[in-house]
Image: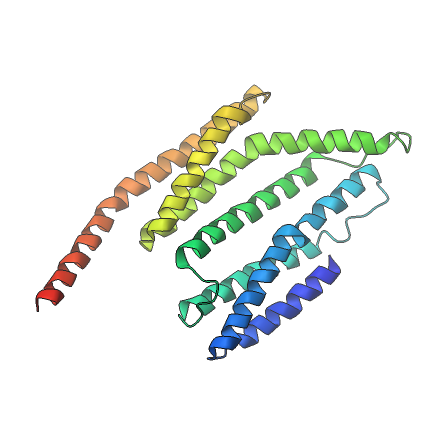
Length: 251
């Protein structure tokens, strides 16, 4: 975790200084370096806290010393994403860049990171180190407890989180008139509903089902109200833009 924090901090500083340049090659290098670091976080650094937590559960003597560093890693990868966004807004970089693809990948990365953080902190609250058992039995008991808590979070916590993330995507997509972001929010919401009715309602306590459905229902109502409220504004702006374009063409 410490090595990962050092690596991301160093690369983030490099990206920051390179982003001040006006050269296409320099900005392209900064953009690619940022993408590499985000992929490294998603596939490696972001998984390290889970490994440490598993070891902590089976052996109480192992302290979560590296857990705090994961917040630094998370902050660095978020700031890297901000730097990449600022680079792309300048319209100079065109290597491995497609606006629609990058937007969808960004939505996927944000959803993945938010889900991982929810799972990590949920496991931290719902599990505890195994004590009082023989050394050979502790890992088995820790594994069963870890898996049980994971299933509960996946079935109850994820639908609520994904509904909230979809609401955020929809809000930003409406306010900034980004069609693909609105579509991404609806796709995520559809995946949430399919997962909820096909998998999540199985083997979940009644209280968990009630809480998940109530919160998700509230999110759906808010999204529906918000979409209907701002829909007229979107249509008005699009109509005005089309009329202005036609007038310019006629002139």
